[in-house]
Image (tube, rainbow, N blue to C red):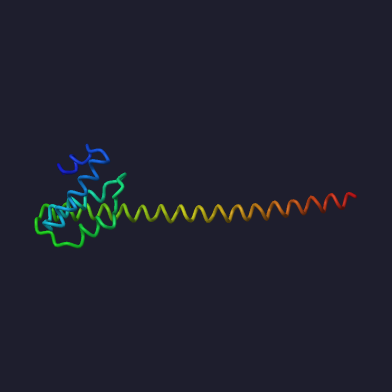
Length: 127
Protein backbone atom coordinates (compact mmCIF):
# COMPACT_ATOMS: atom_id res chain seq x y z
CA UNK A 1 0.00 0.00 0.00
CA UNK A 2 2.91 2.35 0.67
CA UNK A 3 4.18 1.59 -2.81
CA UNK A 4 0.85 2.71 -4.29
CA UNK A 5 0.95 5.88 -2.19
CA UNK A 6 4.42 6.58 -3.57
CA UNK A 7 3.21 6.00 -7.13
CA UNK A 8 0.26 8.35 -6.77
CA UNK A 9 2.61 11.28 -6.25
CA UNK A 10 4.69 10.63 -9.38
CA UNK A 11 4.41 12.38 -12.74
CA UNK A 12 3.70 10.47 -15.95
CA UNK A 13 7.36 10.38 -16.91
CA UNK A 14 8.41 9.22 -13.47
CA UNK A 15 5.71 6.52 -13.52
CA UNK A 16 6.96 5.26 -16.87
CA UNK A 17 10.49 5.17 -15.53
CA UNK A 18 9.29 3.28 -12.44
CA UNK A 19 7.42 0.83 -14.67
CA UNK A 20 10.55 0.18 -16.76
CA UNK A 21 12.67 -0.29 -13.64
CA UNK A 22 10.12 -2.58 -11.97
CA UNK A 23 9.74 -4.66 -15.15
CA UNK A 24 13.49 -5.04 -15.46
CA UNK A 25 13.81 -5.95 -11.78
CA UNK A 26 11.00 -8.52 -12.10
CA UNK A 27 12.57 -10.07 -15.19
CA UNK A 28 15.79 -10.53 -13.23
CA UNK A 29 14.42 -11.57 -9.84
CA UNK A 30 11.03 -13.11 -10.59
CA UNK A 31 10.13 -12.31 -7.00
CA UNK A 32 6.58 -12.14 -5.74
CA UNK A 33 7.05 -8.55 -4.60
CA UNK A 34 8.36 -7.43 -7.99
CA UNK A 35 5.51 -9.31 -9.70
CA UNK A 36 2.93 -7.43 -7.64
CA UNK A 37 4.71 -4.11 -8.23
CA UNK A 38 4.57 -4.59 -12.00
CA UNK A 39 0.94 -5.71 -11.71
CA UNK A 40 0.06 -2.56 -9.77
CA UNK A 41 1.90 -0.36 -12.27
CA UNK A 42 0.15 -1.96 -15.24
CA UNK A 43 -3.21 -1.34 -13.57
CA UNK A 44 -2.69 2.41 -13.11
CA UNK A 45 -5.14 4.48 -15.10
CA UNK A 46 -4.07 7.38 -17.29
CA UNK A 47 -0.68 5.90 -18.13
CA UNK A 48 0.68 5.04 -21.55
CA UNK A 49 1.60 1.53 -20.40
CA UNK A 50 -1.73 0.58 -18.78
CA UNK A 51 -2.63 -3.01 -19.61
CA UNK A 52 -5.32 -4.61 -17.47
CA UNK A 53 -5.01 -8.01 -19.11
CA UNK A 54 -1.25 -8.15 -18.54
CA UNK A 55 -1.78 -7.03 -14.95
CA UNK A 56 -4.40 -9.73 -14.41
CA UNK A 57 -2.12 -12.33 -15.94
CA UNK A 58 0.71 -11.35 -13.61
CA UNK A 59 -1.46 -11.30 -10.52
CA UNK A 60 -3.60 -14.36 -11.16
CA UNK A 61 -1.35 -16.88 -12.88
CA UNK A 62 1.50 -17.11 -10.39
CA UNK A 63 1.77 -19.01 -7.17
CA UNK A 64 2.61 -16.24 -4.73
CA UNK A 65 4.07 -17.67 -1.57
CA UNK A 66 3.91 -14.64 0.74
CA UNK A 67 0.43 -14.69 2.35
CA UNK A 68 0.13 -10.90 2.50
CA UNK A 69 1.15 -10.45 -1.13
CA UNK A 70 -1.08 -13.33 -2.17
CA UNK A 71 -4.09 -11.67 -0.53
CA UNK A 72 -3.22 -8.30 -2.05
CA UNK A 73 -2.74 -9.84 -5.50
CA UNK A 74 -6.03 -11.72 -5.19
CA UNK A 75 -7.95 -8.62 -4.14
CA UNK A 76 -6.35 -6.46 -6.83
CA UNK A 77 -6.98 -9.17 -9.42
CA UNK A 78 -10.67 -9.32 -8.47
CA UNK A 79 -11.03 -5.54 -8.66
CA UNK A 80 -9.22 -5.39 -12.01
CA UNK A 81 -11.35 -8.18 -13.44
CA UNK A 82 -14.48 -6.29 -12.45
CA UNK A 83 -13.06 -3.10 -13.97
CA UNK A 84 -12.22 -4.94 -17.18
CA UNK A 85 -15.75 -6.36 -17.34
CA UNK A 86 -17.19 -2.88 -16.78
CA UNK A 87 -15.00 -1.42 -19.54
CA UNK A 88 -16.12 -4.18 -21.89
CA UNK A 89 -19.77 -3.52 -21.02
CA UNK A 90 -19.35 0.21 -21.64
CA UNK A 91 -17.65 -0.50 -24.99
CA UNK A 92 -20.46 -2.89 -25.97
CA UNK A 93 -23.14 -0.38 -24.96
CA UNK A 94 -21.40 2.40 -26.89
CA UNK A 95 -21.38 0.19 -29.99
CA UNK A 96 -25.05 -0.67 -29.48
CA UNK A 97 -25.86 3.04 -29.16
CA UNK A 98 -23.95 3.79 -32.34
CA UNK A 99 -25.81 1.01 -34.18
CA UNK A 100 -29.17 2.23 -32.87
CA UNK A 101 -28.36 5.77 -33.96
CA UNK A 102 -27.63 4.55 -37.50
CA UNK A 103 -30.88 2.58 -37.48
CA UNK A 104 -32.78 5.61 -36.18
CA UNK A 105 -31.29 7.83 -38.88
CA UNK A 106 -32.23 5.25 -41.50
CA UNK A 107 -35.80 5.13 -40.22
CA UNK A 108 -35.97 8.93 -40.11
CA UNK A 109 -34.84 9.02 -43.75
CA UNK A 110 -37.63 6.63 -44.68
CA UNK A 111 -40.18 8.70 -42.75
CA UNK A 112 -38.99 11.85 -44.51
CA UNK A 113 -39.24 10.10 -47.88
CA UNK A 114 -42.81 8.98 -47.12
CA UNK A 115 -43.75 12.52 -46.02
CA UNK A 116 -42.27 13.90 -49.22
CA UNK A 117 -44.27 11.41 -51.28
CA UNK A 118 -47.45 12.32 -49.39
CA UNK A 119 -46.86 16.01 -50.05
CA UNK A 120 -46.28 15.39 -53.72
CA UNK A 121 -49.52 13.35 -53.92
CA UNK A 122 -51.44 16.11 -52.14
CA UNK A 123 -50.00 18.76 -54.45
CA UNK A 124 -50.73 16.61 -57.52
CA UNK A 125 -54.32 16.02 -56.38
CA UNK A 126 -54.85 19.81 -55.90
CA UNK A 127 -53.89 20.50 -59.50
